[in-house]
Length: 547
Image (cartoon, rainbow, N blue to C red; front, side, top):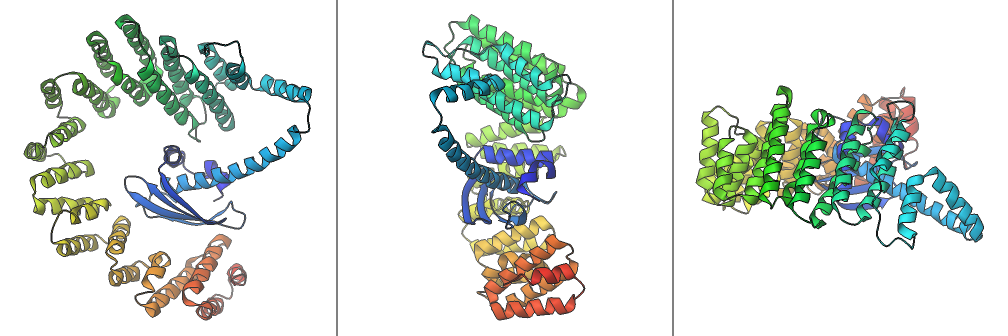
């Protein structure tokens, strides 16, 4: 796959998730080994490491792997974030060169020529013109709020004669709308600004149904609007409660729009933004009435997902503004819903009521509910830790580790005394679940943490593909056996690989083999592959490039 073809080649869902990881700065460290090799540390539910190797064109992905357990497609969201990061940096480098070139050109033009260029550009991009005027017009004492009609005009212009906006037009539109959002953000805080942002959010939500958003730019725009709205809401000083009630009515009017019947999740996200400004009891009552209205509007298919989310928002109101007694009464009244019961248990954990947490879990178990989900296992783990129940703590830790949550391994080792027995228990539990691919990855991480190279060697024997990643580590323990395993994997790959790209991967594998075990060993492998597969002309050709 090429970096330049990411949007076309990847599933839109995994692309959007990868963009989310890039946008929210989950990239903890990036090491550029050279122009073709990057190494990343990315924070997800755990901390994962990955690498991306590019071919000489610096666009084609030659090799990449991530330590996360994802196996539902060729690339995980962490890899996608890394791809996007590399492409962004490459684009920035190109832009920097172009800016330097433009600077040289502009420096040779006179004032009149520069003004003409700006007028031409502003005619083509009116939103940039408005932004320029808002920034530099000296007679403007206040930063004016753009009119709502400008939002709809920009969307209508993008639609043209049709009702659907194509992919690249969507990118251009959302880019222009982001610029407009910056203008709104710079305007003075007021009721009108909040109302405009609510309107903007509704209009942007409607774009989902009428454009190709496979690049995720509409979702990013919606997140940006919510961020600006949240900050504006916090900074706004209302003249009185009537203005706040008026804003609640504006919110209700917006959430009554048909688009939020189709996209109820976006409606609940908008609703949540207002939790911080419900100090007034009448405003709060209006907000709760709005939640009840949204619940009443849910159809049977929506209730399974949206009812818990809306009730969680309502619970947040009780937690922030009502008594603890009222909050607990609300949670207990709705605890038949697992998410509400989880909120109840989290609250009990905050109050160190660990025994009550275990009672809730026991009650769920007796009712036939599954208490072995990751969230509930984590809650049980914290309760047992609070009570000092090390036996039950270890049992929960093992279950969580089997689900790929390796952080609980080190966390538990810091609590218990017999760490060797714990390591043996975890190792055996993981071995019993082999050859599950998730478990292989988890066991590999545990063995690396313990620096148990003998066990790693045994793991590689039954999972030969791990040798490429672990050869450098295992070489220190048994160089000859590691070399034999690596060579065997190369020969196995030579047999199964087909096509130029896979042959190039094999050639790079042999290069790495030579770096670890020497030129002579590398040449022996090349000779053996050539003699074994003389009819694979493309393979022979790629091997001839190895030096």
